[in-house]
Image (cartoon, rainbow, N blue to C red; front, side):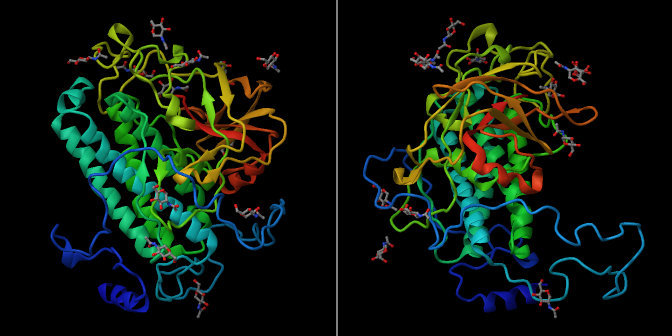
Length: 461
Ligand SMILES: *[C@@H]1O[C@H](CO)[C@@H](O)[C@H](O)[C@H]1NC(C)=O
Ligand SMILES: *[C@@H]1O[C@H](CO)[C@@H](O)[C@H](O)[C@H]1NC(C)=O
Ligand SMILES: *[C@@H]1O[C@H](CO)[C@@H](O)[C@H](O)[C@H]1NC(C)=O
Ligand SMILES: *[C@@H]1O[C@H](CO)[C@@H](O)[C@H](O)[C@H]1NC(C)=O
Ligand SMILES: *[C@@H]1O[C@H](CO)[C@@H](O)[C@H](O)[C@H]1NC(C)=O
Ligand SMILES: *[C@@H]1O[C@H](CO)[C@@H](O)[C@H](O)[C@H]1NC(C)=O
Ligand SMILES: *[C@@H]1O[C@H](CO)[C@@H](O)[C@H](O)[C@H]1NC(C)=O
Ligand SMILES: *[C@@H]1O[C@H](CO)[C@@H](O)[C@H](O)[C@H]1NC(C)=O
Ligand SMILES: *[C@@H]1O[C@H](CO)[C@@H](O)[C@H](O)[C@H]1NC(C)=O
Ligand SMILES: *[C@@H]1O[C@H](CO)[C@@H](O)[C@H](O)[C@H]1NC(C)=O
Ligand SMILES: *[C@@H]1O[C@H](CO)[C@@H](O)[C@H](O)[C@H]1NC(C)=O
Ligand SMILES: *[C@@H]1O[C@H](CO)[C@@H](O)[C@H](O)[C@H]1NC(C)=O
């Protein structure tokens, strides 16, 4: 195995870094390929200058859209009857599969789609690295203790930051010399519970944003390495839920969303990037605010009104400063009420429920956003008519009431993914759309031309 990797490295000698691949010889912490250089004492200021470039990266030729083609020829011809229908290339090896014919893996991008998707993932890993360090630097031991977190818990956050360094290095190695660099970020949180909620939500769209494109990558080789990092990120998301005193995994499936959704949620927290930073081709949609976003810091989280951090964009992060005394669940010792950090917590009063009225407000397009204010929010959609809910395996719509003046109201839908699995739970994605187009997990990005605003992260449970 190690020899194959060596061979591959010599093929890819133009790479600026060595690939961080499994290597039994260098299992000790002092060995192994180098990590990418990064800042550990980052500042967190906003951008005040004028952008030198404006707009998403685009090619010389830009088409007018992707139309639905129906089922591809041959997509349903495999008999699926439990018998073998193809010659076997070797004993115990069934025919078929991609990348299974013996060609040497080359861990690089193989299309613009790959490069842009992996670059987006790298932007995400960089912010996570900075974010986890920032929480530890910004808050004291006493602050963490007041939120119920110990020295062991803080070490876990530190370890998670170190994992991000590995992920950022791996993606940089795949992308090569122009891989996006670490930027300067801004965060709206002022308390530990707000920090934890910010992390829980940021890792949610980091994870979901990768699931959305993983199966579409041309580079199967990049896909396996990215899978190996995103499964780690999924564990981080669950840990932050546990730190927040939420039920760790209230769903049967984790959702996948398009790249532009992740970029829309991420970009507002990047203040500026270095000169010559590699730009992205993805869309930034107008921000969507949930006026009655459920607040996990409250005993009655569902009753929260106007309780998100203003500068948290579509993430709609909880504001904890007004949640005090017996209204706060962190110090409660009552089972069903307590949200003290723990492996799992029951909430007798759920954060949301089918039939709940959800009040929404959104920005108009054309706002500068993201690194150096150099991206512009945009939509190609018409009149707002629906609220899209993306959760688990489902994309469903509820009618939007109102919609004039960039605001409206909807009713949380009552759907199940399978019997016994209410679809809308955990941290879900909602968006304002002009149509209720039917999409499924593999073609969810076909809804992008219909998005008026969003996504926003709705704290359903
Ligand atoms: C490509 O981007 C440039 C710069 O933002 C913009 O002026 C131009 O309209 C874009 N072209 C297309 C076809 O989107
Ligand atoms: C093996 O598969 C790769 C794609 O994974 C393909 O490019 C290549 O042509 C195949 N080689 C042979 C000998 O079939
Ligand atoms: C919870 O208790 C800790 C002391 O253990 C205290 O510092 C903190 O302020 C309390 N939190 C709330 C929201 O009351
Ligand atoms: C963004 O702004 C920073 C700080 O002003 C500047 O150093 C950097 O060159 C700018 N980046 C780009 C890509 O223009
Ligand atoms: C940015 O690119 C320009 C033009 O290629 C080059 O002159 C300059 O040195 C680059 N700046 C950095 C910081 O790499
Ligand atoms: C929401 O709260 C902010 C301050 O936190 C305030 O400026 C704004 O007017 C409030 N909006 C509503 C609709 O209550
Ligand atoms: C803060 O809480 C108090 C009492 O629960 C409530 O009257 C007030 O409206 C809240 N303020 C905000 C901005 O939510
Ligand atoms: C937790 O909630 C579940 C589902 O509502 C319930 O069946 C169980 O009894 C609860 N457990 C405790 C300890 O409250
Ligand atoms: C989400 O799941 C938790 C745990 O099973 C449950 O207590 C809660 O009622 C669910 N919420 C919704 C909105 O279904
Ligand atoms: C949700 O749907 C289930 C099954 O169709 C039904 O039993 C339940 O009453 C519904 N809940 C609401 C709030 O409509
Ligand atoms: C929009 O806001 C204006 C002024 O606040 C108000 O007069 C008008 O009725 C509102 N329109 C809708 C459709 O809500
Ligand atoms: C939710 O997803 C399941 C599994 O794909 C599907 O059977 C069900 O019809 C979906 N429900 C809705 C309302 O889309």
